[in-house]
Image (cartoon, one colour):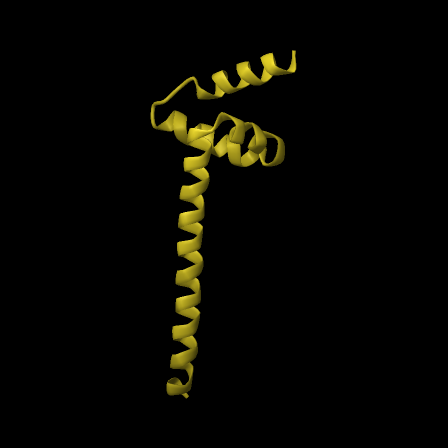
Length: 80
């Protein structure tokens, strides 16, 4: 019985590993895009505000302050 489960366990492990790699690269891509594009952050604020909040908090934890304020100022001025 243990021998028949071994190939299934390997497939499950490979599937989980691939899913984790996609998640890591997706998070890296998303962070890089938000870190370099204020317009993309504005799009994220409209569609996924909770993700943008995580971005702001991670940036502030790293010691970089003022990005949230710069974004809000630009977005407020562009509405006027």
